[in-house]
Length: 224
Image (cartoon, rainbow, N blue to C red; front, side, top):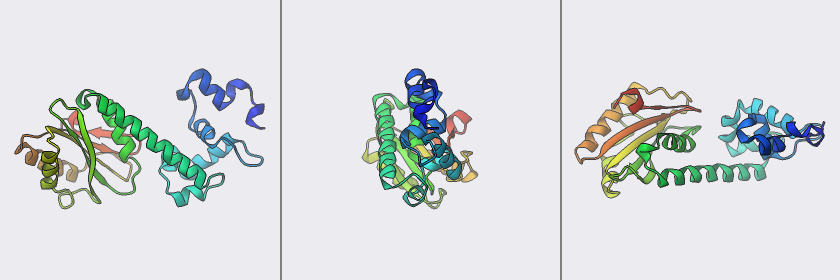
């Protein structure tokens, strides 16, 4: 049965208008993005099959172009459209962060870092450089690869903080495994960075470890 033949209250678009986007399931939201299904298959049915194929919404959104376009009902046009939507989301979150004080907007900070780092295929170490009122100066990704004492260089972080006249930093990195639990290496490099930055009177306010759909704050854990 085509979606147009469904009761109005069950159609994804009408349901979103009446009840808001949060009322829709993953397959319904994806169906709105897809707009059409395949012969004999509604957009919602196709969406459900795609979610099962990729293992959920996050893996689908983070899929490579090759994997994405190989799936039934998808192609380069949908891939380009999705990348544009994701980038608009990241810019929206960044603008929200810039307008507020990062220290007082912990959830905005967490949401922005989640959008930037979750689902990345390798570890990326990033910094939010803040002014003396804890407002965002700049977000930068400084190192990539395995995050440990050999790959993250405190002198480079200190140099960049001084160049930007930062008064404080929020550190962040992702775990490609999807598990956000800090490792012993994460704790060691955080302490090394905190000590190095303290020498130039730059405070480390927090270190977020980003996983799939979750994040851990060192400050909230009492690890700073």
